[in-house]
Length: 152
DNA sequence: GCCAACGTTGGC
DNA sequence: GCCAACGTTGGC
Image (cartoon, rainbow, N blue to C red; front, side, top):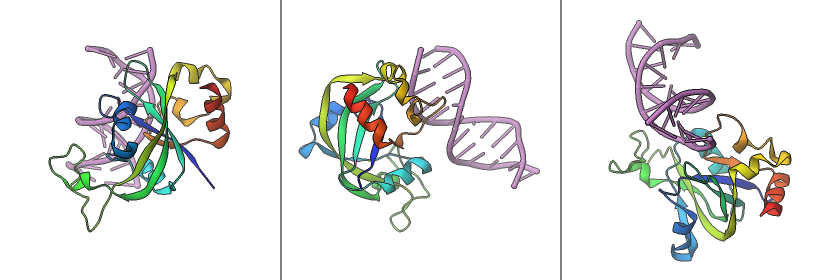
């Protein structure tokens, strides 16, 4: 059974447009350094679908649709001391952090902005919209996923 | 730039 | 194991 997710990225770091230019529109989703988010990454299956959310920017919102194209595997950026994602407690023998590969299915012609999500009462229980939420990887119930698609 | 909310660290 | 201090996230 397919599951649905939402992945956040700051567009100045990595955006839908960046992914669109990658070979096969595919890229590892690296750099997740939060245990709860990592655990969700590890639950993902190939062909699960995910929204691509732009955070910490002028118009935060959902900008595209992703497909999980490779299940979780160790994130090597955690081993590289020069990487902003370096973690001295992670090693190839004992990887602490994982990533999945994502493939862009569609860049939405019109983004669905955070403001619009908040105005949709059927979505009020979404983790994304809860006060103080900072998770960068979160599950989306199938019902909410379909509501969001219908708003696009 | 501000700041509330949250997660992590580390002394005790 | 507690919890204060600190760093980060991310909307506004």
